[in-house]
Image (tube, rainbow, N blue to C red):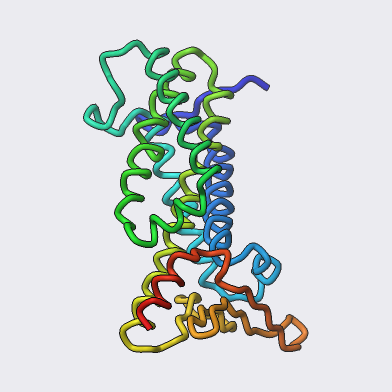
Length: 245
């Protein structure tokens, strides 16, 4: 079946409802993975027990990510957000792809350092978001569309959406950790709840024990407990916290 654009007014929606569904699923999954990459991937096995807050955040991320990608797909970021608009489309796309490859490589090699930098300078993420979330996506997607390669453009869209929403999930999780750590240092209150939207689980940071702890019940009503040490999160934060004691 040949690919076709489905227009809504002056907007092109890739693959229509199917494309929207794909973008929403990718956004929700990437956001959840980003958050639990900080909290601990082992907690994903208890996702159905943690509570509705996970679902609520994932739905929000899915809707937001889908809207962002539709804006970029249609070239609606505005001229001021475009990368070197006077350049030919192919050169802009090649430059953007090259920068993204370099950024992705640096993030993979020094991801722990990136997380720790976000902990001390959260505003850094706004720069990352501005680059990956729009400026570097737009020339790649529009070039592939103009070259009559909509399937490749849509595949690139999903990969880039997954990357930026994953990073947003990490950023929000690190923000939760930072807020709890600040309160612990100022008020000596060791526990900070992660499950901000409620639910039937106690999922929280314990700064005194340096653990992330989950206490809940299985679907059969049996008690469930899982924990993870802070060592994999950001050792520099603990060094700083210990030095203040």
